[in-house]
Every structure is written in structure tokens, then in C-alpha cells.
Length: 493
Image (tube, rainbow, N blue to C red; front, side):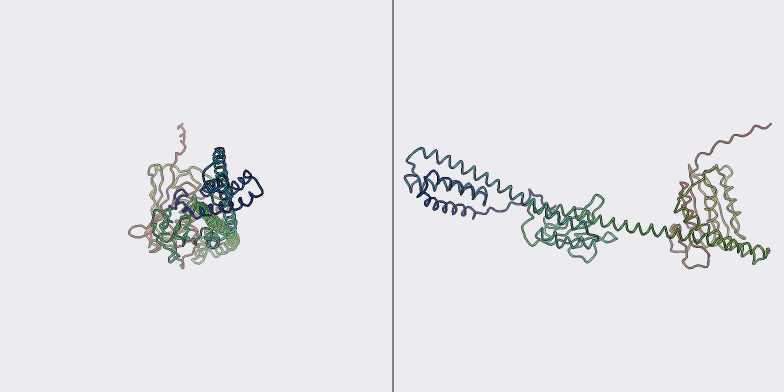
């Protein structure tokens, strides 16, 4: 991983500052020699203390400590009788020297601590200003490209290097080719762990690859390239961790803004489509009614019957359009009652013109009642039977079977026609406006199965399609059996 601050090697000690401290004491000694012509020796001591404090403020604790020792030594050697000697003629000067050394050391250390705190405060201010500036830029970034530009132009210079934002495509893969090592970037994206320079994974690489992780997932990879061989210092490490979080959150914000925009467009599209379906369906009902009425005036000729059958089929399609628009805008509202399944099947068969096709119904008499909305469930069956009538030859056979398995009732509607076209996902036919063949002479708009799935799922069940062996189509409806109410039988008189 990127090294923690305590793992960063300390900067090498600058020994030249000790020379600066000695030079400062030498300069102070010269100044003191001039001042002694005017002031007493006790007053000149303060010049040395001032020098120690200034040295500690400018060059740190070590230089301040050395300046304290050199200042006391210079004061003794050059100004305390006998001069030009470290010999002290008066023992009282020993106490003065020790006190002066202690005061110089304490003053120097306090000054050095003040300097360190000032440096830390200045570094904190620089870090806060940098974070605030980058945060302000990221907060107004509206695209991933804007965030990438901020990484390159604003964040890279703060880390003494170059930062590049690597984002995955819709397939969750880092695009190839990309700037940097695609393999390492993809591994970091998938594992959510850093790799490259300064980490435990591939430390010999020239760049560092850092995951941009949010509470939901890893959104991308930040690549950091630095020409300097020195590791990041504590301040830069703090900035880097903060930038990682800020960039990740900015990418996630942009992502959800795009999702919200797409969702809004989809909702508006659905609303307009439902309004169009409703308007078109209402407008079609009136001419269909007129066509059917005029066909009835033609008597019972083959032409009249054909017109009536086509008008009825069109009427069912219009009804499907209206139902889809109503269910999408209002939801499915069920009028649940207990019904016999065979009666609903019989009613749906009577409402569907199947021509000469043979119908085989196998529903056990002991099958219990099922709780459902009879009108909507009959619509489902009519749609299935109508599909069988449209897509099977006139001599085909329609099989309707039902049984109970555990707590479920299973109803199967099968035919021995040509079945579904090869190469299509049969369950994809339940999507709105989906048809087995895009261009077909068979009338329909692809709403019957979609409407059927909505109705069955509203009942807490499921509907699926499959291919029948050796040929044909199969639709299977699974409903929860429930516990029908007990029917009290009247006593015979």
C-alpha cells in the first residue's frame, strides 16, 4: 500500500545549518566587542541570548543547542577575564556561565518548537487551501472528462508528479489501449487494492495505481507518476488520501446524475407513450364498432364473418393497448374472488375464435378453487389462446392441462404448431412490443404476453414460455393455490 506517514524515511539532516549557527555566533562576538565600548559586560550577554533564539527559530533545535554552547564559550573566551582563555578568575562566573547556558538552551528549544509549530500550521493551511480549491472544482464537474482534467492540471502538481484518471467502460474493463499499464489498472479496479510504486504489489513499477473506492464499489483508478525518487512526505500523503476520496465521490455523483437523467427521460418517454396508446386506442374503438356493425348487416356470408373475426381481433388488440396504458399509469387493481379454473378456461375458449383447431382440456375435477381476478385472468387466457390461433395451422391441436404441485396450481397451454422461431430467447417475448418475427403477416403489436405477465405477477404467480418437444409452444402459469373457503352443503329435506 501507499506508505503511511510513519513509514516515510525522515529527511536527511542538513549539517550545513551547524556551520550557519557557528557563523552567527562569530558575528555576534564581533558585535559584542563593539558594544563593550559602550555597555557593560552584563548587558552584552543579552546579545548572545538573542542570537541563540534567532538561530533556533531559523534552523531548528540542533542549531540552537550548538549556538548556545558556542555563545557561552565565546563569551568566556573573548570577554571574561582573563580574556583569550577559558580560565575563570572569579568562581562567580561559573554560575553565570551555567545559568547563561541553561537560559540559552531553554530559549533555543522553545524557539525551535515555535518554529516547528509555525511550519506545521503553514503546512496545514496549504493543505486546507489545496483541498478547498480541488473540492470546489470537483463539485462543479459535470462529466468524467472534467474530473480527469482536474486530476491532471490541479492534483498532479500538488503531488510533484502527474496524475491520470483511468475509468472503466460499460463492460467494467479499463479501455485498451490506455495511458499506463492496462493490466495493473484492471487488477486494481477489480481487487480494490493499490499497486505499483510505493506499494507491496509490483513496487518496481514506475507509477502508483490507486483505487477510487466508494461505499458502493470501486469507480476507477488514479495513476500517479513522479520523477522524484523520494517518497511522498506526510503532507503529500494526507493530500493524496483526501484526493482519492474526493475524486471517487465526484465520479459516483456524476454517475448518479447521468442515471437520474436517463431515468427521467425514460419516465417521460413512458408517460408520452402511455398517453399515445390511450389516445390511439380510444380513437380506434369507434371505427371498429362501426365496421363490426356494418359487417353484421351483410348477413352470415363468409365475407361478413371474416370481417367480424378481424374486427374482433383488432378489438382485442385495442383492449390490450388500453389495459397496458391503464396498468402502467394506475397499477394493477385486483378484484380477488374464489373461482373454478375450468370455468375460466371455458369462458376464455368461448371468447376466442379458434376455427377448426382441436382443443384438449385436462383439468381434474378435484382441483381446488383459486383466488384471482376473473376478468383479468380471463384476459391472460384469451391472449394465450389468440396467439395459438394466430401462429398455428388450422388443423393444430391446443392442449390445456392443470394440476396441483404442493402449494402451487400449474396451468399449461400447449400447441403442436411450428413453435417459436429458432435463435430467439422465448422469455424475451414477454417484453412490451416484442414479437417472434419483426416482419410478419400475422397481425399484432406484441403487447399480449407483456400484459399477461403483469397480470400474473400481480396475482403473486409467474408465467414462462418454452419449446415443446418435438415441436410447438408451451406456456406455463404458476399460481399460489391458497386455502379456499369451506362450502356448507344444505341438508336434503
